[in-house]
Length: 475
Ligand code: BG6
Image 1 (cartoon, protein in one colour):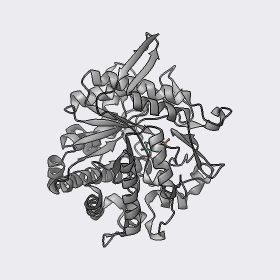
Image 2: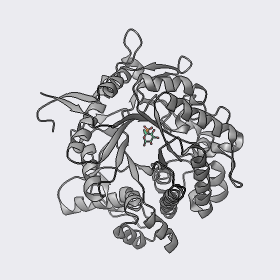
Image 3: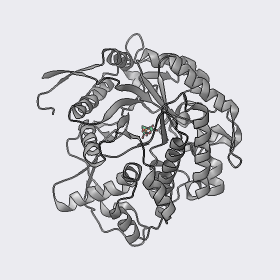
Image 4: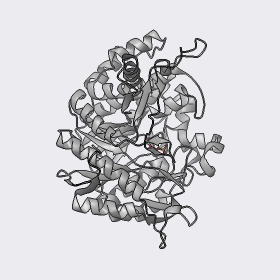
């Protein structure tokens, strides 16, 4: 065993994240303000674990004062959430702001700042207004991109003097991948072309709001939160390595490259064209993307992704899917979080950091989400009723170890944000897997209770030092 005592760099962010729809609940929301997620929940409640969903969530809308006190208790320096686009507007067509919701956002920001906690906001975390999906086909319409830019400008006008960290989207690839590529989420429509049209519209929307933010000369940073999957080939053989490269093009570089380098990888465009996918970007769109790259990115990192060469020929009667080029691979002996079904391999953090350093100009970034969702966590309560989540402390410590090691090796990472601050609602899994530093007790009026990890995080934040014991062969 070796004991490490690793200091955090000056100003290093130790925060936590969540989103509007996963916490706020529908209190005060008008019927016309459903988001895509709300529509999914209303139309397809049976797939949501035990029927829980966004309707009440953690009731943050009514309990934010209590929750912001708890942010201090667990030592957060920063907290990231989203502003709920679908609620921020009363009328999407006319671009009229809902002053009631906007006032609530203002109060949340002021309460956080008064407690010394810096807010960070995404402008979208799956909260596309359902109206825009129904009437315009969502991101398939350039008009929706323009409405998003208008919404962003209204947000900046109100809050950019107080909030210094902005992100266009959280994980912009996710909704269309689950809906149009894999067809496993409402409204279950397989359409690979639409998948790419949405990817492109979101890349364009990011560039357009970066442009708008800079033109107004706001004093802060603007970027995007991505979920790049650190992807390893099964073997060093050419065919397995090729599978990993292609996976990376379709799922990672499709957002990383436009956001940071201002262009799509040429090889991705060739593969799309060769498979009949035409998302028809105009020269003007590509120029906007080229000239408006982000200041920084957030990378959400949870698990490694492993692939091998495809097991079979892609069937001709099935529409194109990137799976034509790879098959998944389970590493024998892998460490697992069985509640979520995700492999655990903290070294992904180091590998991603080195990739950003070497391939993306060492752009500034934060590890914007990382965490461990555990089922039946109440079983870990001690006699006083506090959840003893030593497994979460171990998970965070090992990921931070690799992050601090990467920083020693020159990575430009400025912070770590845990998913999540409190337990909250997951898409479909709802409250099944608990992620929080703070428990939400569903049996008892959603009362909050700090877990052991919450106390530990507070100490980490105060001492600014990670103490960890690792087996000598761990590295
Ligand atoms: C991230 C998302 O991908 O993972 C969050 O940004 C999500 O919205 C988190 O909740 C954990 O995943 P899940 O599916 O277990 O909730």
